[in-house]
Length: 418
Image (cartoon, rainbow, N blue to C red):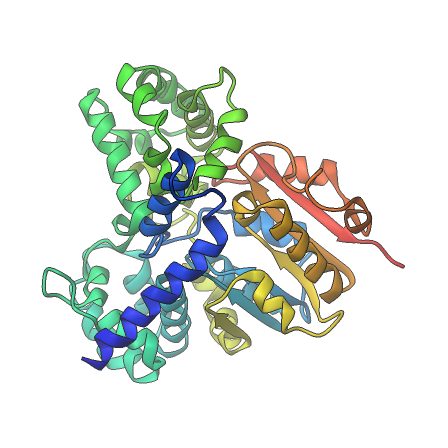
């Protein structure tokens, strides 16, 4: 009973925080209703993994030992990747209680599972029937009470939440369901997206995309479905971000935007070097030799990450709320993912005021946008923005290198010296 009450409290807290972040229009309006439906969807697990390339993040941040980072937690793969550079402190915030529980469980697992092989089985391979037993033996005794209550709560099927790791965890959450829906639509058009993984070179990947995948985006079904904002809620795209994304399309349709982003995912990087493509097209990681994996699943990084997990703290609050607690000049790196696409100008101004106040000398801000342009231009006071230098060419280069392929823009700002 106490677990149920605790989880109900987490859900209510998540709903309140999301309402503050997402609601921009009155309830009795088309946009307002859409925002509230999105917030309802977002109260559960959305991202079983992050969908931003942390290798690009770390290069853009020039991340090094001693740096103090504030980031959005999301699925947590980004945080664990940053630990390969041995920063002094990572504070990760998230409005979603499910993401908070996932991140705390990941950190505890990295610290207490006996070996790299155990970590790889738990988080990297599907259909490992004994993972929930490994959780009970090695993770649960060291997990905080709220996170443990979350993972051990019974679902409508009667199984504990942690049991999802006995199957394929990455098919769960809104993102997992959205990818599944994409596969179902492809199958309706006679295409199995997983077959692209048999390609041996970029030329074969391009041929598969042009001949098999590209025509799907021109079908009446996809053009109709993608024109509905709710169709992209599974990607974690709120109504405000949908509008930014739509504006970046070549012909003003969401189908063209999705086609362009999937083209980059399918054609711009060798598939064995892109674990985002592995998840999108085959719905699992390739754990065979000579293929890329998230940093925390690679043997070479295991010891470094394990030694660093105690330098990470997870906070259930908004980015701005957390920064208000920080002293001046106490943060070296700010990672915003795509959160600003959700924000009103007044929220952006408050956020950038707090980042400017807490920024140490030479601090860096990185973020992504659904569209190509920086979201803050014209939305925050010029006097505030002038305290930061925008690195346009580096930003363009980072966006080009981002293997996740879903975003239209990557943006890097560096604090000017006074």
